[in-house]
Image (cartoon, rainbow, N blue to C red; front, side):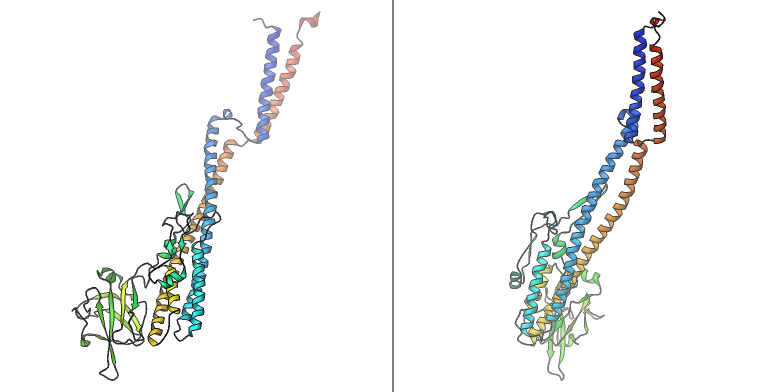
Length: 437
């Protein structure tokens, strides 16, 4: 085979260029600290690194969502903590105003502060986050959820603050499998509060003339109460003045049928079939082993001295807003007190308000507990996310990072190879017949 001088030069240059390119690529790897500069360096590892990088980016977004969730829940918790503080002050004011012998001016001053606290509650219920979204509007974050004036509620005992939000709970995707609730509906927080003892409510008849004061009652047998078809009853009083001292009797009546529960017959029971009333002693709402059989599953306590014809009613519990409860207390304190019967009604109204306020406090505590549970969940997810981030980083390092000891060793070898190629080419390039002429 004949080898021309041109072939020798071309081959020498190609070899030097190849060694130079290899040396340059290795130098770029050392400079970047990466083994894979292009997918061609290791197609399988490059594809895997891309998958891990995408997973790591998704995890970074979850980290942002988790921080946003903590911020939203923390803001809601702060608002509800303020509500709890207000409820504590409301309780103090109601207890103070419930003193039926308080001067009218003092009651008016307490009612005035209650009005201010009412407005403060409405303000919190309409609180917004940093982006202008209403916290308690459900999905309708752009809509102001609550509207209503205390004067309207006091003037209309059947009215309530209007709610323009919905029942939704806004959510954030905080992990692959978890959408976390970051808000609570204003309906659930401020409006859907079971009044009375949660099973039934107590009330006095408008025409009562005695000084009887009824408590919220207690349910001792929930199954019995829940099994009742008709849940509207009255405790009617009759005072027998024909004896000395006078004896007060009470009858338990089904207000739907008008029948006495003590006799099972329509109309009031004869005094001989009624029970003797003792102030402060629990009135058991059952037959106590006698006929006819009935069991309403609870009891109530009435203090004071009911008059003949006085009546107290029991009805199923329903939802009552916190705003309605405060408005009822304001109305009671601003009512005219002209005698003992009015004082008893004031005590009853304030007692009902305090009972319903306790139910509202329980509801707020339950919501705050749920918020705390979600915050704990976010903390747990953050811990898991931290472990995953470390795992992804380690995986990427094993796929992409350069082994510096091997790379520097290869760099030194490549430099030697290039030097050898250059020097050998210089020697071969001098092989010419002209050198011997």
